Image (tube, rainbow, N blue to C red; front, side, top):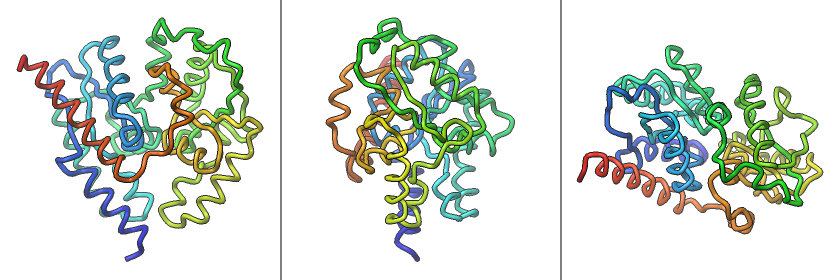
Length: 283
């Protein structure tokens, strides 16, 4: 078995283990759930929980599912593995009687939309744009002397409503952006998917994509894309950091999250969700 396939297998086994997965209690009023995805949870369980709180405060009863969408199995060509793992997510969705799913990961968005056609799937950016950004974030960055290049993730090339929603949110925050020549429906892959099969080729692609931008600062709304742009040598940051974390400079200075820390972060997020469940039970 190739080393890359072993890595995917270990990732999927861990991502669906009880040690790294969690969900809010069933509630008959929980018609929607938030699914943050692996990459964002790897990066910052605090951002995950702040985003979830924002949704809960503004939309009412909203659940959360901390589980992978099984896309790594699909990307690596393991069709049987994908079917098996995705069925576990589907079982959780059905158990919670979910009618709407809000995703922070654009790969989750496409994967769930394609494989659970009876569920309404929305990007977090549609939801934030509909609800409105937090009042303290409005025009927060209007005096910031940085023009960001905005990288659109490739899984949502055809989703114009997400492209527009992100740009509306950035405009509300006062963020100045420049567009890549290849953006929106013509956006290029960041190279992350290639790393499953060929890390050297992936790095070349990451650098090629990153340096298509004039700006040394790149924004994206996919944490895998952010990581790719950092790997390529650019300053990169997730848009959710701009919404929910006012210490932006610390994010630029922060090194990438290493392999061990990713799993520590996932377990930390699971712990946060379990603690929230106990609070809701009055324990």
